[in-house]
Amino acid sequence: MTTGRARLAAGLAAVALLAGCSPAAGGADPPPAAAAGTTGPATGGVDAAREFRSTRSYRATPVPVRIDIPAIGVTSSLTRLGRAADRTVQVPSRWEVAGWYAAGTRPGDPGSAVILGHVDSKRGPAVFYRLRELRRGDLVEVVRADGSRVRFAVQRTEQYPKARFPTADVYYPTLTPALRLVTCGGAFNPALRHYVDNVIVFATLSR
Image (cartoon, rainbow, N blue to C red; front, side, top):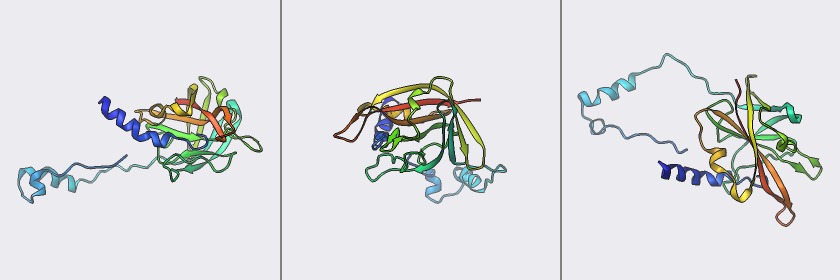
């Protein structure tokens, strides 16, 4: 089990390298009898599964479109973020707008939803400039495309060197809904033209 977790964390490491600011699907093979085209009790379960039709309908969780953080005066629409050519997570193209990592969890679903934002720009403070001020109990509200809202309560705010980004804590699957907010922090390195640290807010679903 430890080895499997380590491999998954290593595979997510490339995702965690936040540029500037910063599952494989599979299925079981059919039973041998079914694969060989035989009939009889061995194929009964397979045939039953093919005929099964659920009476329930399921709707996907709506995508997030806005984030509100009253404690630090943040109200921002959310852009969809993917991965850059080097497999790192994209960062928002606009300094005043935050972005949601769309290849990950949707806010409100079990797992860690990740939202990124810039700390500043050449023109001044950016959307997550005050992120480091958040404290335990502060609320973060995410508005979704259907108008529904999901609220998260801050558990802690941490600062990490980018060389030791906590990949597993940010991206590793969880059984309950969680939210991670990420921006830059620490000193600015003029040679590399980016900050040396990341500020990360860890939040959990608020009932």
